[in-house]
Image 1: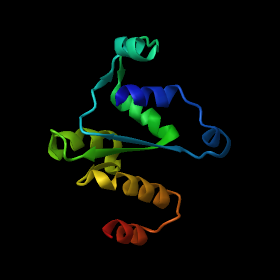
Image 2: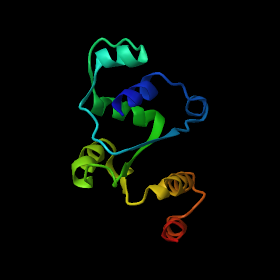
Image 3: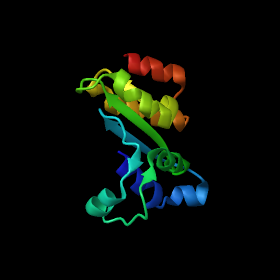
Length: 132
C-alpha cells in the first residue's frame, strides 16, 4: 500500500488539481496493515524508482492527501480482525479507514462516498441507499 501511495503522491500529475484545485480519488482495498516505511530498495527493485532513503509512511500519506481524497476499505473476511488492521489505517487516514462486512458492498460504498463528496447525494439519501 505504501509503495503505491508513494508513486501516487510523488509521481502523478493531476490536471484538475493543478487547474481547478480539485483532488482525485484514491481507494485502497485490502486486509493488511501498512508498513511503517516505504523501503527504498524495494521501490528501486519493483517500481524502478530511485529514492535516497526510506521514507516514513505517515509522511507519504500526508502528502498523498494533498492531491487525493484517500480511503482504505478493509475486507473483514480476511485472515485479520478489524481491531488488528484498522487502528494503523485510522492513524493515517482518520475516519476514511472503513471496515466492510460484505465484499459485495465495495462498489456501492465507493459510489456513495464519491457521490457524497461531490455533493450529488445527501448523507440521509446515502444512508437509505446503503441500508437498502
